[in-house]
Length: 128
Image (cartoon, rainbow, N blue to C red):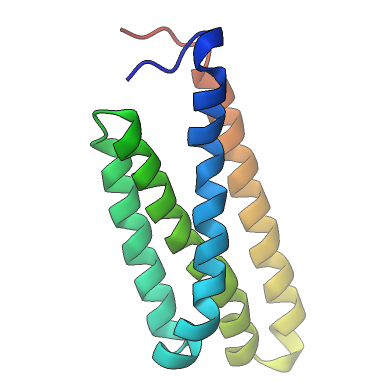
């Protein structure tokens, strides 16, 4: 799967951004699934869907499979991102509620930042 070069920039941007489309639909689906399944089962479902999406991306032999994997992983992430803070706020003690939600958001941002820096670092590594 060759996504390098100026002629592939738009395709690479699409493959990268399509994850957010999956996140959007996962967050929308969390609205109804969260009520139907409950918060805990929705988080487990989101994690399972994310794992399937990750496997699809790891095993991708072409761009279409990579795009499907990114959408699937995005749906799982959207489910988790929309459900976990609500569940955490509902189940934590009032004295800890605000602190825990802020800590979770800080860790989400730190993880996202770390993944971007790792990706940036690996962009300088040559490959086959």
